[in-house]
Length: 539
Image 1 (cartoon, one colour):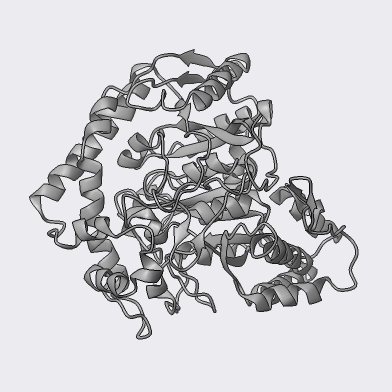
Image 2 (cartoon, one colour):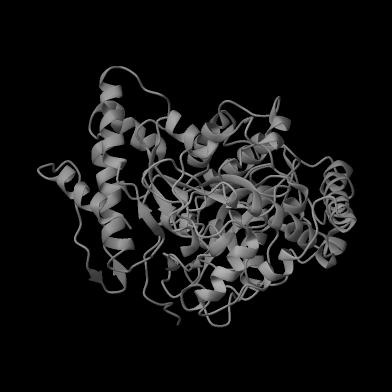
C-alpha cells in the first residue's frame, strides 16, 4: 500500500470533527471500526451528504484511506488493498471544486471506488495482476473501465489484491493469494477465504474500504467473492463492459463488473462502465442492449408475477447443506413476494456441461493468445513479454512466486496452437452450444422464465495455502460458458458466514436480473456488516 496517501489522509482529516472516529481496538472478538459513520453508507447516502455539504469528497476519501491504513494494513490486516492511489486526495479536491462551481458529473461524483489490480490505470499505480513480474507495469492509458469511472466523477482510490493472474496459474491455488500481495483474508472471519480471483475487491468492499469495487470474472470470480463476503455482485453479459486494458484470461468469457453492498450501488456503478468500446470489438454487440441508467430497474415489486426456475441438476445443489437450506428459504421468500416458482427447471445440458472439458480447453487456448497480446504492450522495465517468459520468470523467482503452489496451468497452455486450431474451434462451438441454445436459452424458453436461481456457493472455507482451496461447488459455470449475466445477492448466513443466491438469465437481461435481485434484497435485507472475527466461534 502507498503509505503517502494514508499520511495525507490524516492531514486532510485534521481539525474536522463532523464524523465520529472510533478507536481501533479489540472489543471481545469484534474490531471497532474507524470512521464508523460511513460503514454501510450507500452511494446514494454519500451523494446526498456531498450535495448538502455535510461531507466533501476530500473528507470522504481521507476516511476510506484511514480505514484501509488501520484495518487493512494494520489491526486485523485484511490485506485486501494492494496499493492506494497517491493522487486520490488531489482528485477529490478537484472534484469538490467542480461541485462548488455547479458541475456535478452524476451519481458517482466524488465517490471513491477500488479497482482490481489487473485493470490498467494511467497514474502512479502499476498493474501487477498479482505478480512481481509486473511490479513496474506502469501504463500510459487507462483501461476503458477506469476511464469511464473517472469521467463519471468516481475517485480511483486504489488497487485490490487478487488471486494471481486471476487464479489461472495452478489447480492447487489459494484464492486471494498473490506473489505481489500475499493472502487476503475474509472480513467476516479472518481465518477464512474471501474466494475467487476478485477476492480483494470483495473483501475491501465488504469491509467498507470504498463505496464499491470493480472485479473481473471468467467463471465465478465476481459472484464467488460476493458470496463469501456478503455482497451484491453483477457479472455482466460478455461484451456489455469493455475488457480493454485489463489483463486477460479468455476473451470468450472475461467480463468486468461491480461488487457492492447493495443492488442499487452495484447498478449505479454498472451504469457508469457499460457500453460499446472501439478498443474491445466484442462490445459492439452491446449496442441496443446497454442501458444508460440501470438504477431505473430497481423495482421492489419485481418478484410479483415473475416466473423463476430452479435448476436442480449439474452440481448446482447438494454440495453444501448449509447453502441449500439458506437458498431453499430464499425461494420460499420469493414465493411469498408473489413469484411463480417452477421447480425443477433443469437445464437440459447441465450434466454434459459439468462433465465436459470444452470450457477449460477454450480458456487454455485463449489465455495463451490473449496474455501474449497484453504482455506485448508492456514497457521496458517489465522483464516478461510472453507466457513462456513468465514461466521462466516464476521458475527463477520460485521462492516469492511459487512457495505454495506451481504453474501447471501455464505449462498446459504454453505449447498449444493458435486460435485457428481445430481443437480450439471445436471446443468453443461445444461450449457455446451446450450453454446457450441447448442450455440456458432452452430452459428459459421452455417455461417462459424470467430467471433461474441457485446457491452461489458454500459458506467460506478456512484458507489453506498449502493444500489450496477447499472448494465445494458453485452455479456460475453455465452462464460463464455462455457469456450470460449473473446477479448474486445475500440470502442469509451459516455460523456467521454469508451465503448468496444467484439470479441467472439470458444475454443482456441485466435489467430483469437487477429488478429481481433488488426486490429480493429489499424484501429480506440479509446483508450484515462483517465483524472481522479472529476465528470462527463455534458452539
